Amino acid sequence: MLTWSVAGCLTLGIGIAMYRLLHLPKISVKMSTARELLRDGASFLAISLAVAIEPYFNANILYKMTSPAVVGWYGAAWNIAGTLIAPATILGATMYPRLSTSAGDAAEFKRTFDISFRPLLLLAVLGAVGTYLFADVAVGLIYSLQKFGPAADTLRAFAPVLLLMYVDLFLATAILAAGKAGRLASVKVASVVLTTGLVFVLVPLCQARFANGGLGVMYAMAIGELLMLIAAGILMRETVSVATVGDVCRSLIAGAATVLLIRLLPAFTPFLAIPMCVLVFGGLSLLSGAVKRSDVEMLLASFRKPSPVPR
Image (cartoon, rainbow, N blue to C red; front, side):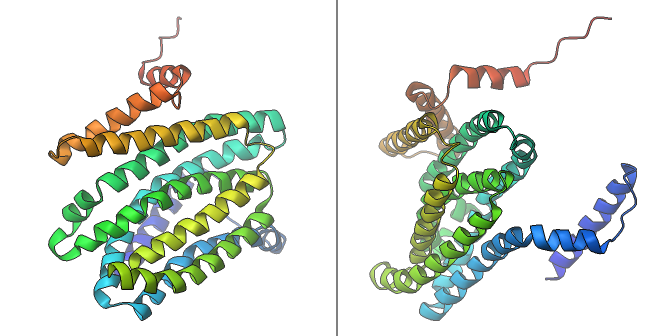
């Protein structure tokens, strides 16, 4: 708690300094603005609370129904999982302004959605593949497989949750930009209720069968995120096209084939296996059509130096 407090104060200080360097208007407080934020931000607040509270529900239920060792394994796995989720949050925040500015034009909004979704989908599938294949490596590197070996199983069970979370976070960003925050908040609350109820059922089952109740939490989260995906797809049915569904299928095929090929190869050092996994996934994505030629050209163009402007 002390570390978080110090980090928060440092961040606030840096934020204030940057604000002044940008010569932005002086910060002021108005009741009209406060009322507007409370009224229009209620849905955002509900979503944020649901996202923040859910992990505490899961951890406390796990603590009541299992042993301290299982809670420790789950905590170790969740620390790594939280780091893996961070890029999706950052990408969603980055895309929100672009999506919100084009929300008034259906054609432009759909174009922006399509351009943004495919790279995030590929990153999500690659992240899920890497989590599934190299969970032991991550746990062994940060903790110890001798003491936290079952945490790798918990982290491996998180792989499909990671994929669903990436897609759900992006769709949620698009839904918020489209002005449907109220509906999204209702679905998110329902998802948390469903996940919590499933945790009560699945934790004892997994504890009895696998001696690791943390697996039950991950399975419950996967079902909850699947509900969010279905609901988000319905809310965005006018934007999600057949081509988008095709991209999802091709990316999943490339991911599944990558797992199969890497599993068939003989075991060798992770320092070679991880880059090979990325290369194999990239090659299979090209073969399956998940990555298009235009995507490669755009990526290569981003690394080229701009031509000097003639004077």
